[in-house]
Length: 111
Image 1 (cartoon, helix red, strand yellow):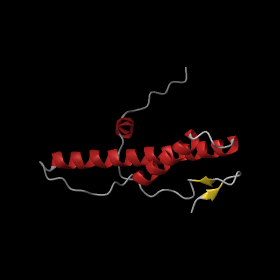
Image 2 (spheres, rainbow, N blue to C red; image 1 turned 90 degrees about the vertical axis):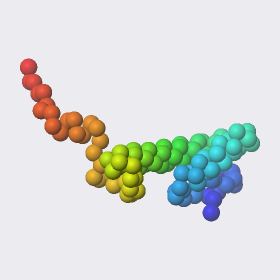
Image 3 (cartoon, helix red, strand yellow; image 1 turned 120 degrees about the horizontal axis):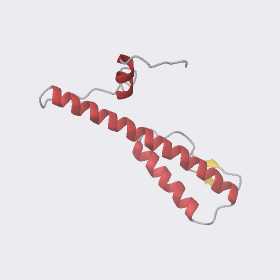
Image 4 (cartoon, rainbow, N blue to C red; image 1 turned 60 degrees about the horizontal axis):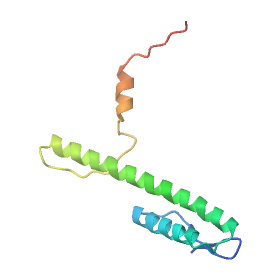
């Protein structure tokens, strides 16, 4: 259920969206409200904050999707065309920076 803003208008950001599509739809709604030029300044600021949160959620969801696609592609190449879908496990994923720095000896010099 939407929250009420100070001017009595409805806020589009009442709970965290569960999907990318839901977050995008709500972000578009917030943008439409802000572009209507009918909101008081306080409501514009509230909607702006909501828009930033929704944009961050969309970015996170896109990053997760990209990582899953990379993993599926890698597994498909390793299995010679047999792609296996497995959920992305961030704890066990190795980033390129981690693998390079873990094998290299740090160059530490005090003088």
